[in-house]
Length: 381
Image 1 (cartoon, helix red, strand yellow):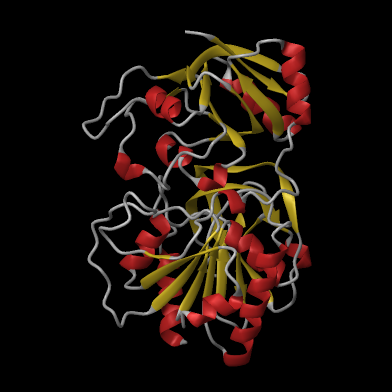
Image 2 (tube, rainbow, N blue to C red):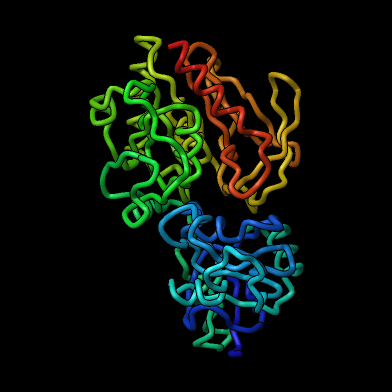
């Protein structure tokens, strides 16, 4: 196997073996603590712009299959593992991790000390990096890592959101936008949810369908007028990649929708991850970049309303500053690792959001009650 190197902006260079595509890439280097779910991580659009390192030592042992994808393709810029399994031991597997990454032009590196990389990232924060099996000169790679644009101030959502609207209809869209799901189509008079797609994971509309909704997916760039023309009973604001602060148009759209809700006690709104951050900004709060982010399927969060602790799936590098929230918005959930804000509720309006991923793919199911709460808000509106 070819030599590959991962160079970081602080001058660190880690040498390992190349797998996947034989090329060079750059991005923000982050780590994920999940033991399983690497295919869902690879295909989560929220990872666009990032080189992902897995803390679990062996990755790829159950291969890749078309049913576990969370979007139409993998979005990570590069993939870092301690050991890439040569064996795909699963009857559902249709190809190996190596072949999947190679097919989609994504380089990987194995054989480095991922514990060292994670420790470095935890101490110094997320770092820009370059992964290469082409140019192996340490000094040049470090300089390119320093010159990498990073995530702050960039709107990456426009590169991952769909171009047009679509209805999530079970059994359709496998080759177009969304994969086949084994669910009965909702009734035509079912409550209608418009989902704003900023890089939405496919398991989210699956959960909305399970709650009995009709789902129309609009690109996140849709205006408030376009959204309201669909006469939704509820609005969902999806996850997505990067920094929420540059998304001024989306924040403005949500402010208009919140004003509409205030005037009529009307349309319930539910946001997840980037959607949570955008709703926070629409309320007037500030967002900030976390030192190394939260990524994994094992993060404890406390529901401030009940005191109950749930284990959550997370993937974000930015957060809402709770000290900047207005008085009519309350913190509903808190991260027990670092005390950061994990959920919001408006005190009067039917608006809710969480920073983590209740659709749990892959991950724990503790948080799926949030989809039921959204359905209850719609039923009461």
